[in-house]
View 1 (tube, helix red, strand yellow):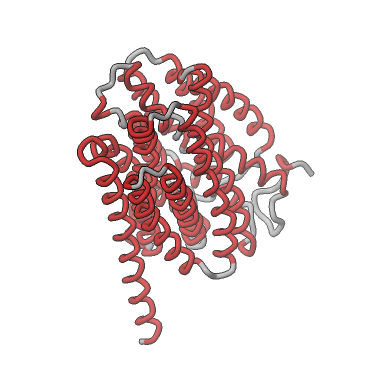
View 2 (cartoon, rainbow, N blue to C red):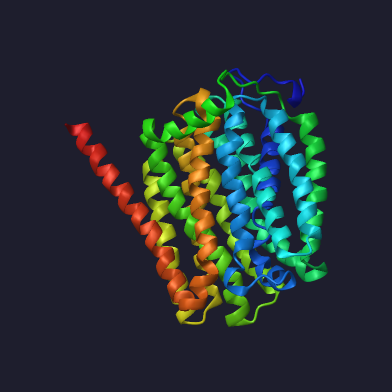
Length: 403
């Protein structure tokens, strides 16, 4: 039986081919959120966007994504999943083409908002594969798909830099539009139908998603941890290309090589999934948050010593910690209520992309006002708070267990 004919429920795990397709699709779609990140220094002057607000080129994409997570991803509990995800991918084709041809910065920001909105399709694909997978192997399968997603995130920056170095920044978005058009056609043929069970109306569905924060403490905790971690992830990767250009006089090719080194952090996603399946989710979360915190100490040392090597090592550690924490968080919330999986995922992802939008929005201003030292201080503060919150929750949990 082909992948497209497999039922959406049952004890059998999805085939390796289908998991690979989901991983590739997740990586390709999510990459659209990150193409602008290393290109701020090229796009902003080309479109006459003032330097102090140049990082809005990244922020608007993340705000669009957060909006999609809040307003569109919950439809995964109401609308057939293959149709919903492919329609959003089709919309991304239009948005990317608009970005490639934008002639003023307001038009590019509008395109960025739409790119983010349509890229929320990836958070329909991930719960979709979780639904197709039995409990015993869900962490591993979701971790493998998240590995593809993470590679998309981490490779987007060097790929965008290399293409921009060779043929200009507009080609980055034009080529991605062509890639999304091809992906649209493949997914329409290969993805299985996954029919949701919810029968609520749209507005009650959205309202119920917000209520999940009140009823699901695991969601609240995991969203807070990842909001902090992803906020500083976005801060780092928006600020560091600007810093490398200004302090080390890097070209787009040099920025591409630097970002490629950071892609080593992608190996954390499958490893984290296996740890979660083995029952080490809490330990993994503590280590992940500590790694995010430590990465900014290493980056501060790198800036002080004028060492690109230390800055790159900080990027690897940061990526490793953030991506591992994300997989552990998703594994935890997917176990809460299968019938609410799309809404739980939407609520979780929206919270930490609000953090990401905040991190990218302040990156330019922090660099201008305090250099890398201020970036590192702000970057360390958020995971320190998240780790403190984690420790307090663990103390409360242990006390309750012995009460």
